Length: 150
Image (cartoon, rainbow, N blue to C red; front, side):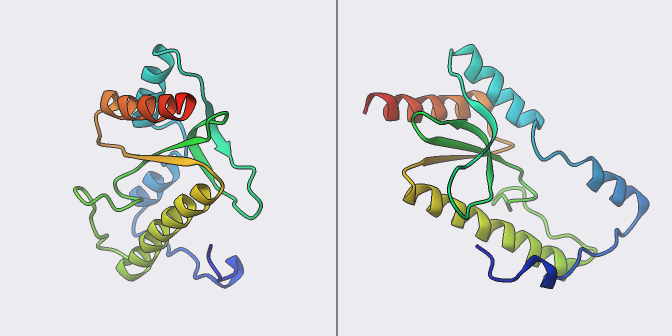
């Protein structure tokens, strides 16, 4: 968890262009194409889940893309840019210093989320947006089945 109060963090830089601003405003937080593809496959396999689930853990203000609450499995479909995919990550050319700090903070928050959920008895499955949705669904189904049947 960040120790810097939100009010003390540096504010986002101004957009480098109108098109960059429009692109940022269109960015979805939930319901992305990769997430929807995984959701469709899991649903077709008879698996039922919660979407955009807020964890009932004190002090953890995070949401996962999908949650199997009874067996405590949290699924995150991470965007390659926002979570620094080792295959597709790029460093922005404008406002580089601010963006590098922002993306580093995203990764640190992801690791902290994983640790806090594990402490609370959850299993976390993280997938990259570029992964084959069928392979992600296979992985999720295996984890959920293992948690259900021990």
